[in-house]
Length: 272
Ligand SMILES: Nc1ncnc2c1ncn2[C@@H]1O[C@H](COP(=O)(O)OP(=O)(O)OP(=O)(O)O)[C@@H](O)[C@H]1O
Image (cartoon, rainbow, N blue to C red):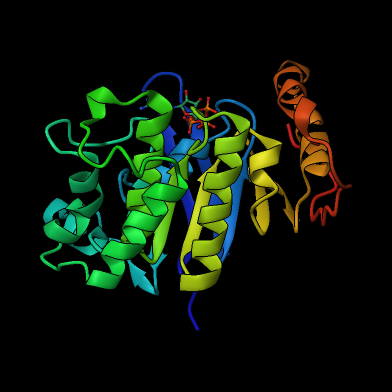
């Protein structure tokens, strides 16, 4: 079976005079029903990877295949139609519509796709919103919620609509550790129960440890990976990047308490 997501030698450069290779011939394959975390120092290309993989940004070179089909971003309307129903996003700017209530925001993707959620889906949406602590906020508008609450609405929306591929950029960034753990468990359940494929950018080794696999980026390349990651091992790997970066990520890892690394390094050289 083809992968849920494949990148073949994807490159993306920014800048005119001074060129920055945000992605440098990145190839990867993510099977269906897998949860992958993407980590790396600031500026290593994580967001660019997410943007190119989801068709929000067009690579300069290389191909992106979703469910075996090439994502063609030359026709924006066709690309949008292709993404709809297949791809979900949880980004830092939560993309909630301000005039709609929590409940309407969660149901919106199904309405846009012209399908309606079944009674069972709606029950599940209610349960999910209960589980993320928003069961009593269904009629509130985003402006009446905190940043963390808005983030949880965006995550519930992404899970309820079950896109085959879900891209999440720092989905737990605005949450305290208890809420973050709840959300990450929900994402993990969604991967296992519904075969969703999730790609999550994070700076937090504890969050990354919920994934099946961590990809480490440096200077636009995948320089390492870890399967069945554990927080302490991920934190140690992050600490091996540049000293300035390491300081920030070691701080992140202060609450990374359990386990040891199960790194399967395919690369012997230093990452940065
Ligand atoms: N639109 C843009 N124009 C110019 N340069 C860009 C643009 N987007 C990204 N870059 C550059 O490409 C490189 C990779 O950026 P990217 O945002 O993908 O990194 P990142 O790993 O997500 O960083 P962070 O962890 O700080 O969010 C950086 O050097 C960045 O400055």
